[in-house]
Amino acid sequence: MRVITGSAKGRKLKMPKGGKTRPAMDKVKGSTFNIIASLVSDARFLDLFAGSGNLGIEGLSRGGSYAAFVDASRECTKTISENLEITKLSDRGKVFTMDCLKFLQTFKADPFDIVFIDPPYLKGLLEPLLNYIPECSLFTKETLFIIERQKKDIIGIETLPAYKLLDERNFGDTVLTFFRLT
Image (cartoon, rainbow, N blue to C red):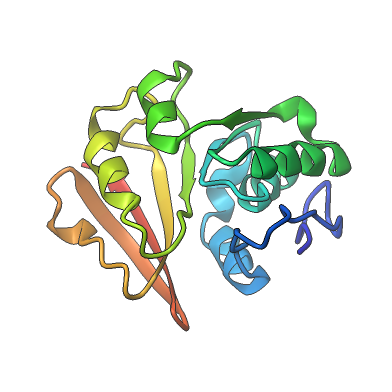
């Protein structure tokens, strides 16, 4: 796994030990950043279920101003910190070892511009987040949310009144869902 482009282009990223994470494939990550390219410069990123930090680090490498990385696993957050050092981006990233919903409920900061949500597939972790996001002060109607999920993990964004579905892209069994608050 590597950084595709930007200031850290080509740098190889470490993966957390234990094989419990599922990094975004380069093809999916590349497509995601092609879609959001015009929004990345100076953006504030939130990388939930961050794993190796792959997505937030790519955003920083492409010109993002700040990224918060949240994962409940100490092994993952240790790896993210190492990856920020490897890419020389640690001055613009902050790592949090905690449950993603708890982070949203307790963290106070300026709103984020782009939020990556990449939970373990089919574990039921999306529903509590989607229920809480509309009342969270970390987001505005301009915040772009991107969920990476498995096709079988139906979330029904289009049926939730608090959200406006913008786009969905399929990559085999992987689906990217782009949405904003209404």
